[in-house]
Image (cartoon, rainbow, N blue to C red):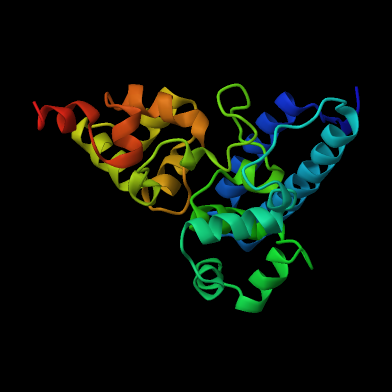
Length: 238
């Protein structure tokens, strides 16, 4: 089995590892210690290289035709994925640059594939574009069984999704239930720091957490993603 410094390159294992590495990087990046933040940057850089190695391995090893993406010529590079989602979110390059704290010309260079985003930009980019950071890095969503590789990002699965405010809904429901950050984290198998990242809007939960969050908070995935209850809406027309 081919590996990247001991890490498996097969699709299923690598996507799970990438997600875990991103979570570690995000946790370290929230520290007030410069040394720990520098360690986070190292983790992000290794994660980025691991993504590239995985992508190269998958393309080399597969002999089957790949599913046709929504925009075949635009989903091959990370720059193309950034451009695609930026347009879907109706953001200008200047607006995206401001969200990520970079110059607009750097966004242009990313989208033209002149250069790639540094690893430390992946989390701010995925937050601004409201997408799964694993998908942004690799072009594959984390939940490879539940989501087709042709899907641009997990946030597009449900029409009317409002992931910009999902953290507000998580916090509101958690407080209603009298649940601490740590207790919710234990229920869905993550860290209290990650819950805080979601609730403060610094990160968006990836698709693998929606079902677990809904069960832990005694609500529905629809409400978490849209702020609306399907049953309540349908009752208005009865």
